[in-house]
Image 1 (tube, rainbow, N blue to C red):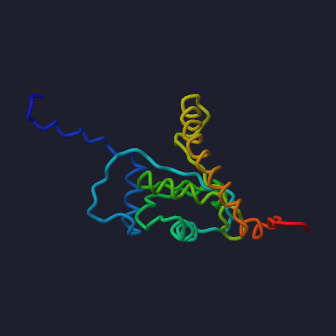
Image 2 (cartoon, one colour):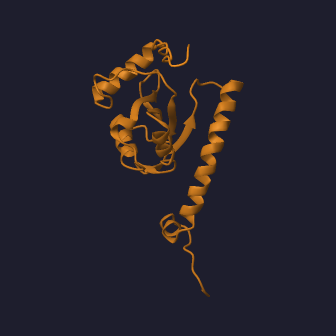
Amino acid sequence: QKAGEAAPPAKKKKLGKKERERIKAAKARGDVPMDAEPVLKKRYTVFVGNMSYDTTEDEIRKHFLGGQGLKPGNIVGMRMLTDKGTGQFKGTCFLDLTDDRAFRCAIKMHHTKMDGRKINVEPTVGGGGKGQSRMEKLEQKKKVFDGDRSKRIKKAKSTPPYAASKGGKAKVSGPV
């Protein structure tokens, strides 16, 4: 390309069947405008576990949209894991999010209470399995978030209401 010329347009990648289905479902729910063009970009996915087997997709959405700054358009996909034989929800799912800000907000929901259970929200890099490349990516991603998470937990535990509300001993100054 010569100086002053615009860069050639990026080649459009073909969407896979599952990606097309996710986009169609997101449009049907109103999470994505109907006229939006699907764009392949970096994925932001979190794993959510330790939920009740009776939890519904709507309850998961309400929980995540109810705290830490997530907006309705931030959740663009949800894959709820079910038993192949019975179709029963297994208490775990993957949430696909729009961007890094939404990803960080979702990670902050780790160990929040949902239906009386403390849920786990963990970063994931997709792909499944235990391949060396995937495990290295996952370790790298977890290091970033575990550092942020441990700072946040220390800060929360240092405030007296946290200690009292969690059944721990409240800090008392002076002789007891």
